[in-house]
Length: 353
Picture 1 (tube, one colour):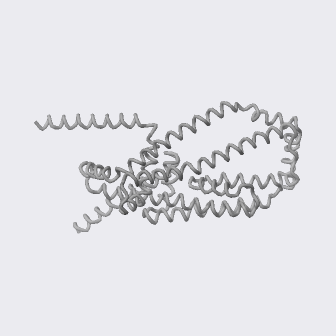
Picture 2 (cartoon, rainbow, N blue to C red; picture 1 turned 90 degrees about the vertical axis):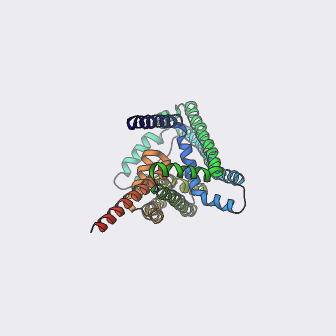
Picture 3 (cartoon, rainbow, N blue to C red; picture 1 turned 90 degrees about the horizontal axis):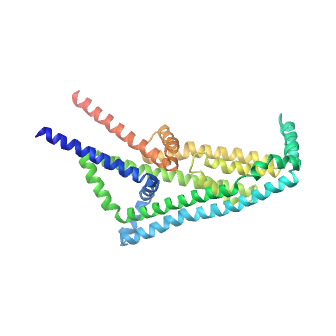
C-alpha cells in the first residue's frame, strides 16, 4: 500500500507538471499581457478597493478602472505615434533636399578643438557637394520604405493585440480579484505553507514601489527637462518633455531624447546651449536614476541599494520592459526569504545557547 500510494503521488505530480508546462507553452505569446495586467492591477488595487468600499459594484468599478487605464496607455501612444509619423515624413523630405542641394558646412564645425579641421573637411567633401551627398545618402533613399512600413505595421498590430488582451485580463482581475486571491492563498498554504502570504505582501509592495519610483521620477525628469527645452527655444518642448518623461522609466531612455535635443541645438549652430543641455540633463538623470529612484523603491521594499539596481537592470535585460517590475520583485522575495531564514537560524542558536 505505501508503495502504491507513492506511485500514485509521483504520477499525479508528473501529470500536473506536464499540464502546467503545456499551459505555459500554449499561452507563451500572451504571457506579457498577463504580466502587465498583474502589474497594473497590483499597482492600482487600492483605488479599486476604495471604489468598492464606497458602494460601487465590482463589475462597474472594473469597467471604470479598465477604461481609465486604457485611456492612460492609449492616449499618449496615439500622440507619440502620430507626431513620430509626421516627423518621419519631414526627415525623408529633408534627406531628399540634402541629396539635391547639399548641406552647407556649419561655421562652428571648424572651431572644435583638435578635430574641427578634419570634420569640416569631411563635411565639405561628403555633404556640402550635392553629388557626394546624394551618393552618401543613397542607401537611405534606396531604403525599402514599403517593407519597413509593413514591418512597423505588423509590430503595431501585434502590440495592439497584446494591449487588448492586457486590458481584458485587467478587467477580470478587477472584477474577480478577491475570489482569485482567496483561491491562490488556499492552494499556496496547502503546498508551501503560511510563509507564502508574507512573500505575497513583499511582491505587492515591491510592484507598487517600483511603479511609483519609475513613473513618478520619470515624469519629474520630463517636467524639469521640458522647462529647459522651452527656455532654450527647442521646437515642440512639451512633446520632447513628455517623451523624456515616458522614456525615463527605462534606464538610459531619457538619454536618447535629450541627446536628440542637443543635436538639434548643434544643427542650429548653438553649440554652447547644446553642451549645457547635455551636461545638465545627464547630471539630472544620473541623480534621479542612482539616488532618488532607488531611495523611493528601497524605502518601501527594504531592499539594499545594490539589489535595487541589479533587479532593475537585470530584469530589463532578461524580461524586457516587464522586467523593470519583475526584477525588483524577485529581489524583494529573495531578500525576504533570506532574512526569514537568518532570523530562524538566530532563534535556534539563541534557544540552544
